[in-house]
View 1 (cartoon, rainbow, N blue to C red):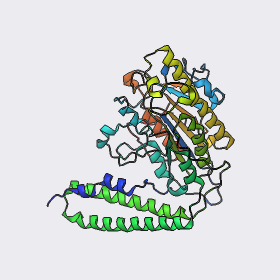
View 2: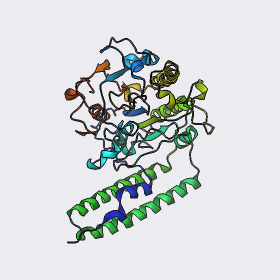
View 3: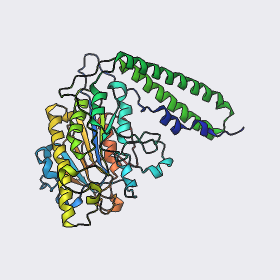
View 4: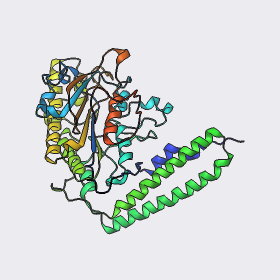
Length: 415
């Protein structure tokens, strides 16, 4: 039996060319007469350069810790978040290791894993499926942190213009635009039909390894077909009306855009436009309005007092906006239904270290524990992927592994 090179229908290239996110429908079984469950949501925030460890981590464990310099900015919400010490993905690589923050697996080592380096948000989006208009929303300043990845190892770039995000969420397209989009979706559907039929005709001539590759490819086609059907279903449904005025396009990518992004993401979750969202704080962005130097340069402080003082200004600003975000989620009455995941794939930008990552969980209606200190001993360390697995299970995803997990996160109750 002859083998065949499937490069011409490479799965990753196909998905990149189609340019749509994969999502599976969420199946819900409800007892007759039972009250519908309130939808759960996940919002993940990642900062490429981490946070200065000496200012981030509290000195003692438990609920009675004294707030660190950084966490003082969210002190009013301390009963609604937990901060974790000694968690990471056992990754190296400095800036390249940051990409593993929501995946648990570095891009460079992902080939040996069946789901590649898929990120937490995309697993959640697959579970949520067509329950909301957008299975997930990826937003951020500038080019982001390379935080979000599909299960085929394709990076999802963030929307970095708040005006574009506002338009997608709340501005109804004209009938002509919707008809054009309908034609485009129909064309894609016909292309998928042709590709699927062509691929199936090859099946009998392939060896076992190539049949596996072909089956993976056909699975991708089926997933894309589902996503196209969802797009059609939402095409003519009216978008919600926001309680803020339309966002003007100022062409800026400054850190000062952060509160506007947080307001838009809160509205997206509140209006059930999505149930999964991410926000990326990148390596480079403009901080001139804070009267400090470039953020990347400040992260390489080498403990110099002047740079540390300026870095404190930036990190305080970030957490002031996180505090505002928590306020907004509470005012929208969705904080208890929204699990906020915050942190970085880098602990100390000055050392380029990917160990002992700054990680914080907030909301979700959890019984928060203040400061959870996990074992520091290498042989007893708890993988950060365990925490991500428990977070996904809280969201409703039924799975037993994620990334490099070796179990759920037993140090905290996610029920």
